[in-house]
Image: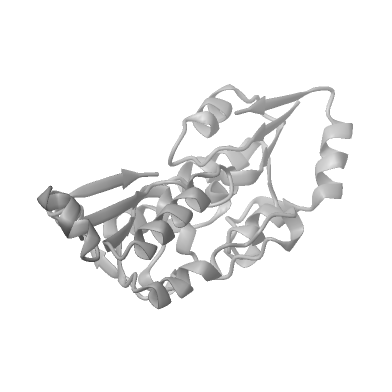
Length: 100
Length: 130
């Protein structure tokens, strides 16, 4: 399953809910304000790193750039994808769940 | 009557604080706040702007929205000075939680603690939350 999350982890619990329910091997794509969770050095870094141990975590590049976040600052284990990559992830997954 | 007279003389000036707590592109709050700040400035009010929680992301350096087809309004924060909006404040705890420092911000600000933010709020006459 592909999980997408689009809310800031500092404002809403969408990311935490997703991380608590996503099964090992599933894919999690951070988009819109959720890309703030993909950057290293924040208070949520530990949770994202832990998730990346047994799940595939992605962040949408154009949303990072819009927010002034550098791909180089992204947490190790988080993969940056473009819109084409988003489409591929959705197409590869049997279903998509959007955590709003 | 006296209040009306004052208005005719060029206006009452009040201490206005704009509290920004949201990230810039996920919702319309940040852009709307900026519009209202400019209105306050146009009416020559004593304007202060505070960035806290996800609001600190509004003034993060290096924003480039070409890839998401949205307007990058971050340069406007640098223009606030021209409207005599020079009192910009940022809460230190909010920066720390997000792994940011003053160097990551695109305008000169005064960084203050949460306790100082409380005092700043107490000093105001009008407070807008976004």
